[in-house]
Length: 174
Image (cartoon, rainbow, N blue to C red; front, side):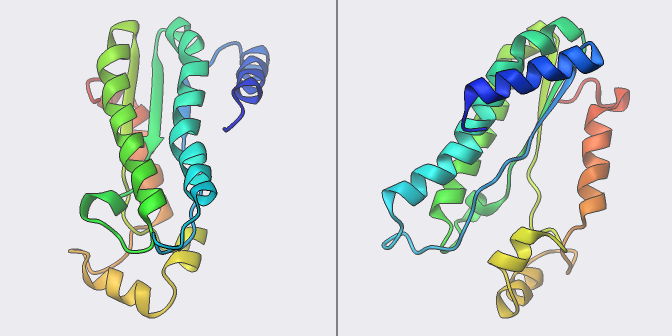
């Protein structure tokens, strides 16, 4: 997602194989734990490049194909880190706040071209690599305690939300 030319090739290959591109899911994420005072500019830039720039790069590269499909849809996967501030996550929080901004702005700009843009910002999701690496043991227990449902979400719950958003039942949702 950091290479716009590679994204363009993937889009062309998709259209060659399937005849069109009508859905784009931006879900790339780079993350690691780092205190802001010790985070290198390169580490910060790398996460911004993957999460934020990657979302823009893929969306921009897919614009014409999504418009031509007559039923274009972009789903951006964000997070909730930046809603309240999260220790050791300034880079990912900044990137995901930007993804939220991209989602809102593209929804406003591209709706008139027949492209719906939506976002899912899941909190902690059980059984994911991110949770294993970023919230082991005690950290995960503390996070779980702050969730109204008293548990982490599941991969299937996020998948169901994505399916709903892509379905005709959500045709008016941006």
